[in-house]
Length: 254
Figure 1 (cartoon, rainbow, N blue to C red):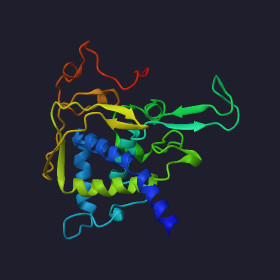
Figure 2: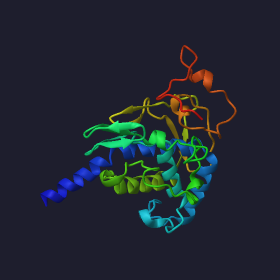
Figure 3: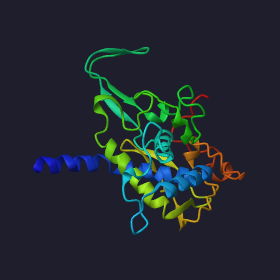
């Protein structure tokens, strides 16, 4: 019994902060992409088996099968675009040649989905939030790795995904969330995770289906092309004193 409790505690611990960040980034992406949110809202309300309080009864209430539901596509795309686990570390047990590098045994190796998930040859238009790309996209475990990959894959991954799925169903069928206009949405890496630097200010409305994007500032624009934001210049408002956008990493060559 003590071992079972300990193992369960590890699962919840491993799925705690990254789940919170993934949920935060997903709600932001949906709020800023009203066309996707509108389709998801209809899917959730057409397929949900609701309890007396109006909440989904179970995580399995949406259709499953070979074709992912829109909710599942949204989650996968959110974790591709803004992966909560910003980087992972490995140590090689034998000497190995990695591209042009010769790595002796015991070398620390750091890899990040922030780079892999934004490679245009793997994901066309990588900065755009396109959940429907997952209708046909089937990347290898090492081309899509929000939870790491291989034998050291995050043990909390299945629980984290289930929690995000349930939470999104319950939130989005009861409320409409929108970003606070003009808010600074920036991110930085802390303890291997992609943290929202100032939080992500959101407004809560009744579930009225009146979805609309609003102008926001911050370095999140380095990672996401919010193409549904109204034609309002956000660069000037979010630029620093030298006129440059704050960045979490050097911009990649296009």
